[in-house]
Amino acid sequence: MHETIIAANIIKEAKKLGDIKSVNVEVGELGHLPAKELEMTLRTLTKWNIVVKEKKATVRCKCGYNGRPKILERGHDMCLFVCPKCEKVPEILDGNQIKILSVETK
Image 1 (cartoon, rainbow, N blue to C red):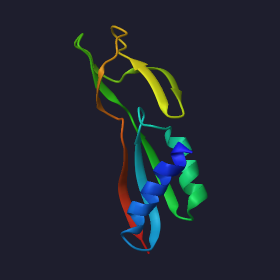
Image 2 (cartoon, rainbow, N blue to C red):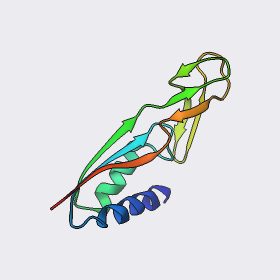
Image 3 (tube, rainbow, N blue to C red):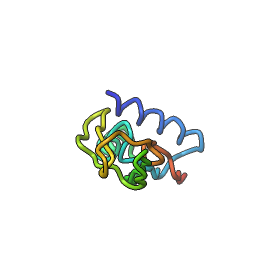
């Protein structure tokens, strides 16, 4: 259900630009849902050419680590991750958002 709401918002925003041919979306690996789930939902709800790319996450930890987090578990509307160096929860710098990168109209 969550993926349907996110997909509906993407569709609504894209349609503001006119008659849509394709949409390019970026899904952060720490985002609300996996990229594949969003892609499947968008394909089900539209006849557009859908391109969904996953963006790797970047975190910063108090221990001094900067880089990709260690993902412990990934599921629908959840992602458990820690710093790969000290195993504590780091601050997310990037890779937790879902963004429309481009829209092509007919």
